[in-house]
Amino acid sequence: MEEKEINNPEAVEQAENGAENAPEVEVTPLSELDQTKADLAEQKDKYLRLMAEFENYKRRTAKERMDLIQTAGKDVIVSLLDVLDDCDRAEKQLNSSADIAVQKEGVQLVFNKIRTTMQAKGLNAMESIGKDFDVELHEAITEVPVPDNKQKGKVIDEVTKGYFLNEKIIRFAKVVVGK
Image 1 (cartoon, rainbow, N blue to C red):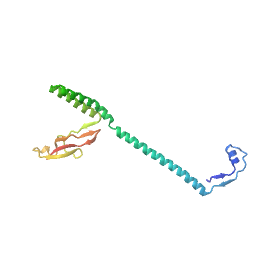
Image 2 (spheres, rainbow, N blue to C red):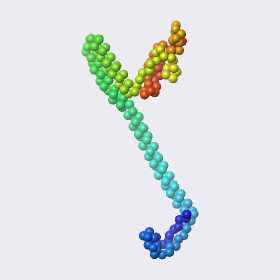
Image 3 (cartoon, rainbow, N blue to C red):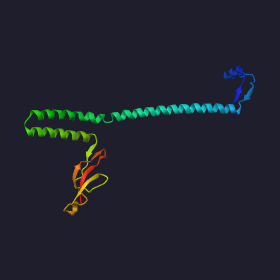
Image 4 (cartoon, rainbow, N blue to C red):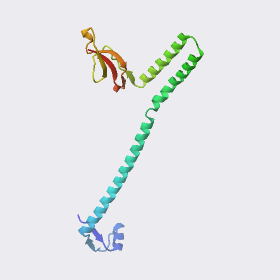
């Protein structure tokens, strides 16, 4: 359908006001070139607005990502502050007390508290000793000969523990494998 240009402003006003007795208006079709130019200008405006909106979106998401990265470990660090306080108290106790049994018990309590805190955040130690060597979980440091054939291909010793964080491996266990 072709749009038409109205050359009489009074007729336009009467037509907009719904006048039934509006005089006949002289209508001339817009040239195809003018219509194409108008469409192009409209599309260009839409494109520029869309690009500006997309740039704003990219900037906003980049900022949000940086904020998230900077504060990602905050909850873990906050939960470990209690353990750090316990470490300070244990250190003070080690310097002032000569009773080894009390010192050992205090240090053991700090170790248990840090393990419990880390487990609450989703960290679990990997059990490797005595299990079959698995390249998906373990990193073999060395192989040692074993007298029992049942121990061949199994983890004999664990040099460094492996850990899961919410069922995802975050550190492979470094192990000694029986040969």
